[in-house]
Image 1 (cartoon, helix red, strand yellow):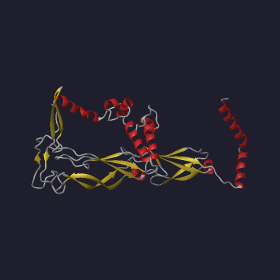
Image 2 (image 1 turned 90 degrees about the vertical axis):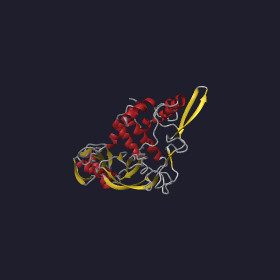
Image 3 (image 1 turned 180 degrees about the vertical axis):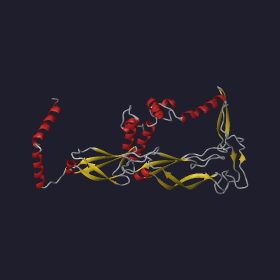
Image 4 (image 1 turned 60 degrees about the vertical axis):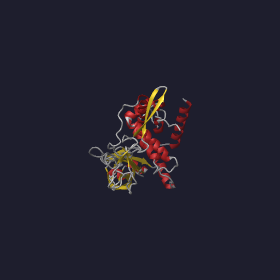
Length: 373
């Protein structure tokens, strides 16, 4: 199935700036996050949104995408782009026609272990203030019994008799184009260059075992949804004495029922009665840490924003905190009794308002606008 255009996925134009792309991603991520949206396709849509943002938020990846579109690894350069896999076959082609000559990987050289990825879901305020916790991850570690050799204690691996330790086999063919040498991974040692006669009873000759590893993680204050934390050396074990890989922790932040976050700033909505907006008042506003007093001037209109300086999120890379922005929404009263209705009519009359006439005037203006008059 063909992929949708990344700009279409995020709902932005192709000339959208970085801030607009980030804002669109946050909105879509909140909408499709599996912890919030229980629809059957929510997880797939969330992954699609994340993939689109990963590309469009990176200048180099975005430039490549704008030029070549989606990359199809099965089509190589003809598929509208390229990746590292496309170049992997060139070595085999040169080996086939020219008999090799390039550098070959030494199977006995130390090899770094693979990186691991762990997705962690945390609460909104845990992302704001940070958290320390233990996580358990499954990973491969070098067998302690044989120290990663795969051989029974007291013995050692033998050099592979088939490939003589090179880890590769050469297949020679005589064709109309001449002599062709094709190199393949040695089938006897699977490219390791060694074989094990007496295998370790704990790892059965693999040299590695699966274990559950408990790791203490410190989540810094101010981390945001989609952030990655790198834990050095906590990935898969290396081979032949090579170093282990790294662990990358992807942060997913749950939405909050009251607060919304944009960068280091916090946003919320507070309802006001008609009397509070008209006469003014002093109200209590919840923040991330406490309740504070906010003075509402008389005549405040619905949709007005007030800023609480320094009441936002601690800055992840720097000093200080963002701000909290409070939007006031004037709530229209419902279920009025007769006395309240009469008082409002008196108020309208004293203010010189003629609600019916103004309503008719509004409808007339709307009618003219539709008719193009």
